[in-house]
Image (cartoon, rainbow, N blue to C red):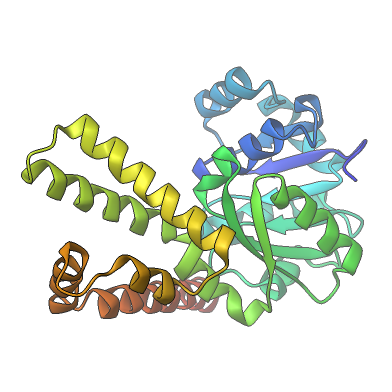
Length: 278
């Protein structure tokens, strides 16, 4: 599907690197067909050239953008206006625009471009680096089912993809876009508890990670409701029950629900701030 397609990243931050790594690890595109640009950080571009073998020549920036079949918008959301203003004369309606920018709508991007190029909006997460992203994706008004299929193919190479309505993408951001950080926080806490209970840090880490991996695999393989699996592990007056009672006393469920709702709300706020301040 990506045979002979040229892909250009506008932005070279952590998310761009995660998507790039996912694409190249699954070999859905050759390094020579991918170029990466940014405004002025030549050191960062040299780093990506060294690590991935892609094209990142500052002197070839305009050529890379003009000749790309697919442009991946991966700059900071706050820079979207100035970034597109700088390069829109190099773009055309035949190019597919794929955005990984939190809070920025497809219509806003189309308005900045000033032409009818199809826009696909996505929200992957940094687990794309190891081929395990959970990505939400939607299409703008000028994008077709074929454009959506191309973008889906790209992001399926680095994990699973859920096609959603654009109005739902802030919730995807709050859940899976920010979600890895919640899991890392959970791992930190579980390890800390295990160390305080007497385990060595290395052992605590290994047991914590395998516990999380095993629980996730149980959910995936069995297809059972998490509440059912939780009840199967929990014996009355047993160790699991004792631990769960403590979590409930600290309103663990409420905290996590509130966490996701607040992150979703913040995604909406950022989009509003960025677009209404222009």
